[in-house]
Each structure stands twice: as structure tokens, then as C-alpha cells.
Image (cartoon, rainbow, N blue to C red; front, side, top):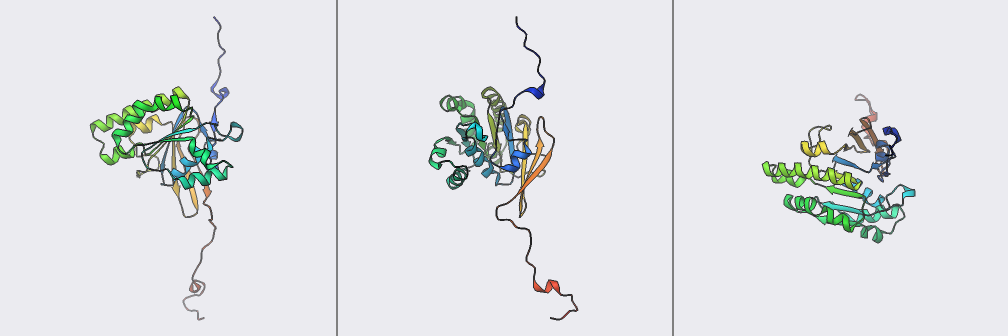
Amino acid sequence: MLLTPFQTADKIQRVMCKTGTPALDSLLDGGFETGLIYLLYGSDNLQYNLLKAAVHAQLPLSRGGFSSPTVMIDSSNMMDLVKLRDFSFQLGLEPEAVMEMIYISRAFNSTQTYDLIINHLDEFFDRVPAKMLILPGLVDLFINEGLDVDRTRQMTHLSARINAFTLRHDLVTLISTQIKGTKTETPPVGKALASSAQVHIHLAETPMRTVYSLTKHPSLPDRIESQLKAGSAFGVTLPLDYFFREDSTA
């Protein structure tokens, strides 16, 4: 019987895909890693980061993509064709070709969300060789409808199912929520999903910057990265009387 040599964790080759957002790439030491679940929460504009990731995954490996389609179960109605077109042009891709490689199933209530993930994920990935699974607003419908005993049990089941599926298919799984939490360190998604997601990313916005905070990761420390918003410029306009003392006269 042949024995395989022991390998330390630092020699394991990670398969990664760039996020399409420079600040996120820096935050995550290069991008999204396969086999991990990423939970994004905070500002509503994080949906644009998910759309960027869906487009960027179609780039060839030489450009930091997966050269593969994306499967999305959209529980928050986040799809924006104009944004997809813009992101495609920025990367030199044809928008029509990009949209054909993003497979979307809409869920309008918690029951549909549960059914799609528990009963139909295998069917989706048997038909589509995707390397990225995006679940925007996964928990939002459950919370908005009321987390009773049955829905709480369903969320626990969903979390275990997503975790096992991500590992088995070696996917990048992105989950987001639009529910507002009270603390940056505590995603408002319940203990089961927060525990099963290995990476937590909080997004906040100021008038000039988008701030990304890494609050949980299996190998990286907590840290913060930010980037200027498009069109931002430092400086403000002050009224003329600001430059005169109260006892001054014009």
C-alpha cells in the first residue's frame, strides 16, 4: 500500500477567482476561494458586488476568472440588466453572452426558497457546470415572514445543505442579506447560517468611500479595506461668511 506524504496547509493550492472589486480582492488576499461560503451584509449596494462577481467568474483563468457560468437563486429581486451590461463592457465581454451564462431562479417566499435549495440544486448543477452559486436575500424572506419554530428549523437545514453542497462541488457560494443588524460583528441571519458561512464581510458606505470589513475568515485576520466611490473628490463648498469673523464687515 502506497502512503501519500504529509502536506502542511501552507502547501495546499487554493483555487481562487477575483471578485471584480479591487478592495475586496485586497481584503481577501486575491479573491473568492472555492469551497467557502461568503456571507455579505450591511449596505444595500453590496448587491452590485454580487453582480460584478457573477460577470467576473466568466473570465478565463488567465484573467482571474473561472471560465464558467453562475447559478443564482434570487430571493431579493436584485437582478439589474443595466448593471450587468456595464460590468460586461468594462471587462471586454459581450453582454448578451454574459447574460446567457447566468442562470437565475426566482423565489418569492420562504417555501419556494427552501424547495429550490433542498430539492433542485443538484438538478441545476447537473445541467450547468457552474463554479459559483449566489443566494442573495436567502434569509430575508424567512425573517420578514416571521422566524417561528418551523422556519428556524428550515434555516438550520438550509445552512447544512448549502455547506455540504459547496464542499462537494468545490464552489464559491455567496450569500447576502438586506436585513439591517445592530452590530458590524453580528450578521443578522441567525446562528445556523452565521456559523456555516466561513467568511463574513460587512459593507458600509460614507459619502466618499465604500468600506469592506472582514469580520470572520478561516485563515485571514479581521481587517478593513476601502475604495473611493466613482466621482468622489475631496473638498467641500463653504459659504462666504465662513471666512469672516463675527466682528468683520465686508
